[in-house]
Image (cartoon, rainbow, N blue to C red):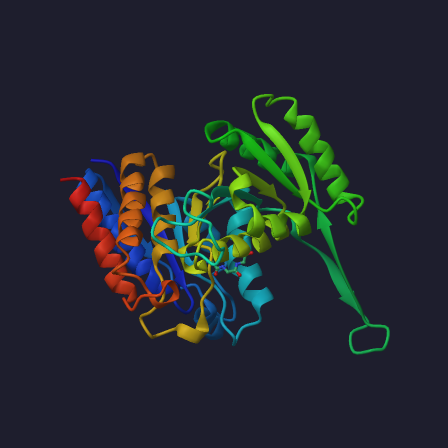
Length: 356
Ligand code: GGG
């Protein structure tokens, strides 16, 4: 029997609650579809930072390297500055293992009522591919003359041909497997170096994928179009920051950010890929058992699909669809009163039923 080793990083706030439910469903799928899952949990988080002065140990990345996948909950807590928690845990994992394609599906599940009037699950079903290793998250810059009237801060973005080309090729190939349309998010009117370059690479590569229809939109207009014409999209490719912002909007139009899933893929398998819900640690609802685990569970389905267990991944997605269609076991953000574990247990039961 095949067995997969998963590194769990529940992280902060509701991260632990949603990863518990995600693992309940992943383990149910493993039992039902005949493979094994072993997991080891790492306590790296803002609480760990407060005890040890760092978000993870010095050899943390080496400890992760041998796993088949990483399953992460949420990172960030008000007691630790966000730029520390992000730059000492999430971003080193994405960059070191070259998880350059951050795949974030935007989908209104059947039965759910999103905020967009008249738009149904047929209208909201596309995928954002966010560049995940450079761009506005390159970390280049500095501060000087702090505390003086001459104080300054500089932050610059970084777009390399390798970085732009590889994520765009990934998005083109994804579009080829879907409905053959790729939209690029740009801002080449204002950002006259990086995004002019981004547009040039996009135009060059489009010649290699003649079967894929292409279009580019300035990110401001694109954000508006997410609201007015979500049905116009199939695959969207965006830089790191634009992709981050657009996919929170994506979470909103799919009914709740709590349902949004994300896969940080290392297509060349430089290291393990990482799977996480899009949402953060949600300090406002922590400890109340009301967090929506669907985003984490869906990320678990993407993890199994990535590991080659496509049937199990598809069964989890079908179980989520059944749950939302029935509408009786939903958390508060979706208008219900179910707890986090009610939702996890229901989805796990539906997965088991599918395997007979
Ligand atoms: N689920 C992971 C998490 O906590 N995400 C929140 C966040 O702020 N992520 C930053 C990013 O993806 O750029």
